[in-house]
Length: 271
Image (cartoon, rainbow, N blue to C red; front, top):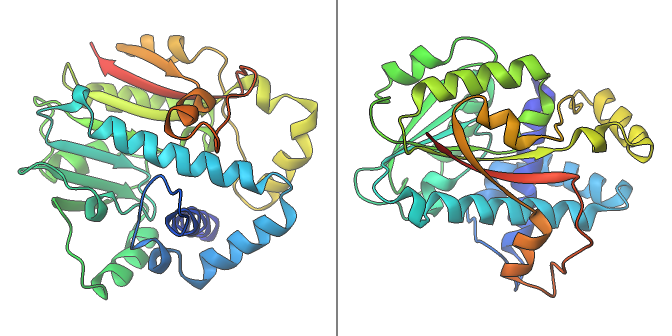
């Protein structure tokens, strides 16, 4: 659990760092306090020892902005239920101007959400939608808790599953997709990010993967067939290349690289 909380704070530190840039893709005013000293210290260590730390920072910034845009895009017009499994230190409830009547559900481990609530209660900002937190482990029975909190499976919903699946094994990934698919009414939208199986088996990644495993945050799941992964669960899928999406925002900061299949953004609509 310490590794889970630490990772969430590190991601918040990345969002805080992005918010300081003059060419930032988004502004997250709560990221510095949600990160705290622990998150900033972890970020400084990663900047010191990760030779590709700038690529990592750019990826997290791009992913955050891309997910923001999907959640507020034409495909989600009329949706008033937003679900964030493994919400971590996310602050979208506070920094995005949601339509009236929106409810945002944050699901994560009790220890993480307790730490997050303590931080947020000391801040003067109020959420810009109805915000409901749900203490749950996604590898266990979280569905009933979500429904008991007011989620209506007969109405469309948007699911933002950010930076989660590669930490799970394949059976856990499929269990979560089964549960989400049961809850998501036709026309619901899901956005997530994945890495390829080819990346996880690449020789040049093995040292980094071993280091992540030693820190309790090993990557376990990748797929070379993201279309098939979601299609079998009843979703119509569009696969987006992060490099190409980044170039749409800022071609100088995110120059298009030779097309690779190391990572994917997935935008799916429930059939």
